[in-house]
Length: 328
Image (cartoon, rainbow, N blue to C red; front, side, top):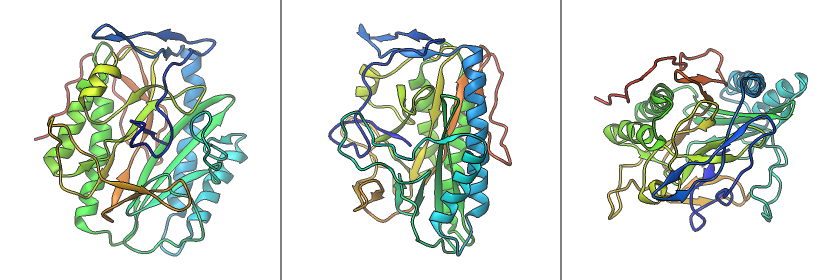
């Protein structure tokens, strides 16, 4: 699940404000322009080993859901494949029963996975709906195992998906790979986000700028917020320096709409609406969308992906000073 960035636009829940570290982790307090940042937990190697186990289970559940995601299958059957995988390994579906921010009046999320099809951007609720040839199906899985959380997502192109949709999906995957490859301690997240943003702009796709990644560990959503684009308010209030021990859920989302900018030159996300189920975020124009995500640990040399998909992609880097991605 992703975090909405602003209270006036948000669909999911309010932006986090301040977080304590885990028992074994230590907090990181960052400053920009003299402002105190929320506390970001720096996880120990033992903590990260625990999150890695949760991440491996999340990846296994996502792989099971991908196998089940074929034309003629219901989204509830895809959800069941993920849930069976998680529960048979002693894990807990992290999204099941989730209510959003503290004090939220939302009904509890009723499923293990978020399954969002075509113009459903994120937080789709599994149901009797049947997948058809040509669908883009985004599957988001969260797991809690022994008190530690991990979160990952992928979009499945079912059958004869249009060429523009396939190109958009490939672009989203490149954005995620670029973000991971660009992680190095001492670099500010805004530098990474600018490189990721440039990939989408070069390809002409709209980033879902109002929905962002997040820290993760003992809880699903922790500090910091992890956007895939850069805007003034984030530079003023949310930017942070990457440090070993940080664990981040990075999740680019694209919509098949032309790139738009506001008066400040910032990217503008798609217009969205909330479906009657109270959870599913719809793209107002009806344009298709896609969503990919990994949980990643920052280490001394770069980054480690803690939620490897099956088959896995080579998204781990141990470079001392990785270059920010070339979009040409």
